[in-house]
Amino acid sequence: MVYQNILHIDDDADDQELFLTAIHQVSPDINCTALSDATEALQQLQKNELRPDVIFLDLNMPVMNGEQFLTEIKKDQSLKDIPVIIFSTSSQPNTIKITKELGATDFITKPDRYQELVKLLRAFLSAPQ
Image (cartoon, rainbow, N blue to C red):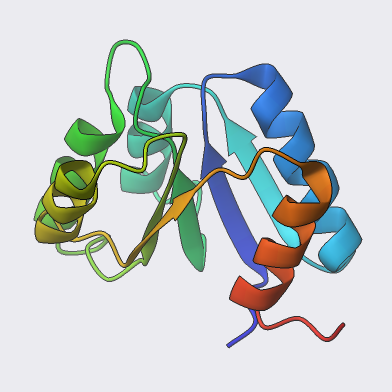
């Protein structure tokens, strides 16, 4: 499946910019919304202001962290079926296990290099190369 509407939640502006640039390189037709606040993202989702095909979610954020966001979205009947991909610097097996138990569809450790990010997103999003 090729996702057309992506929500990226990450409080780091540099990470957001890299992600958006990489998505655009993978496919300029993909609409990607970036938010830095998980609480705001949850509110917009609950008000139906956003309806992404998939959510890429960072874990380490102030106010509401990724695990808290994941817990809340999976409790909401109208949102629980949206795939949530954890997109974090963490690669700890216990963190991966916990987030999958909370309902994450997948877990991707942020790559160190931009071209690796593009390659990873291209493969994940099933976009033609």
